[in-house]
Amino acid sequence: MSKEELHHIKELPDLKVAWYESHKCLDEPLLEYVWEVANHFLPDYEDISSAPAIFANRYTEKDLSVEERYERAKEMKTFKGTLEEYKKREYRKLDDSFKEKFLSNEDLQNTIEAYKLDVSKFWYLLLFVYDFIEDIGTNAPIMGKSVLEDFATFLTKLCDASSITLKQGNRKSYYTEREDLINIIQIAVHHFSESYAKIINSNKDREAKIEQLKEIGLKSFIDNSLLSKMDFKEKFSLDISYKKWIFTDMFLFFIESRKATTIPNKKVKVSKDKMMLISRLIYTVGYDGKRYNEEYDSEGNKNRMLSNLLRRYKNEKFPSIIANNYMVVS
Image 1 (cartoon, helix red, strand yellow):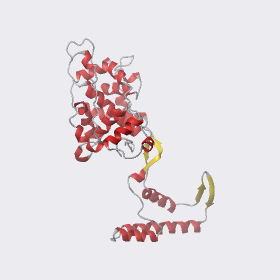
Image 2: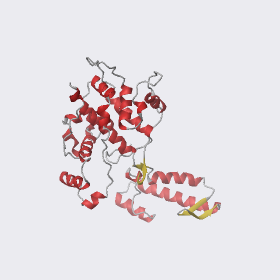
Image 3: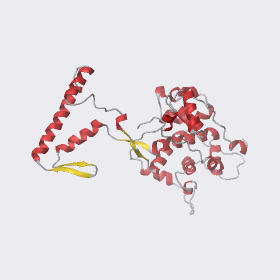
Image 4: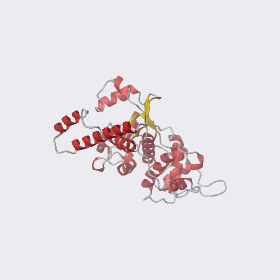
């Protein structure tokens, strides 16, 4: 394969496949690596991920105006509202600004060649992984507690309370330490909790339960769905170390079973180190600086920064995440 072929990215066509019919782009060759990773990390119905279709659409839309995106969505029947309603939707453009950085990194390109990876397919995998991580890690909705979970916590704290403070805005409007008053509040809240639990756990039909709930001041069941846990007003961004963690996890899955070969007639040293490959990809997307691109430091020591990062997080639990575009909650 010539140098020109190695450094040429084939253009992903506009597949116009909605997320719910992702299977229609299973045969797109340029998405082969994307499918491999998406089906493992973002499985959907019958293990066919909707993520490749979402990614393909986001890639096509990256250079379109909001009006063009709207017309395309109408044509694909993925949006039924007006242009004004469409414009109100939050939109984060897919970022491919590091394409030249990817192609011009000879050390990185040599390793890609040594692993016999298709540079175009690998580029779209890199774009997909980066776009997904930015989706869950930059200005994403916060995953909180449901109303019932928060109520349970409140009930537990109320049992041990020795005082109660009420606020109006930022100003304290009421405060009491009266034991008899606090006891009345505790009894009232406990009574409500027991009454609610008794109603929803009874054998009565839904309509009868709703009638009973009205008697204790509720219009219907308390929303305990996943959606009720999402706070769309407050935004959350993952620490960069967590982004590097999940980035590495996804690429290690992709590369772990693959083996590098020796490139014939190559006069420079080619790294076959899998962690170094991922480290250079992290540098490429901008999650760290040039130090992640160097295999050895100035004293000749092997670069183990990424390995050390993963070791530090080995026993940690990854934070709860919500994706804006890729419809993932974890």
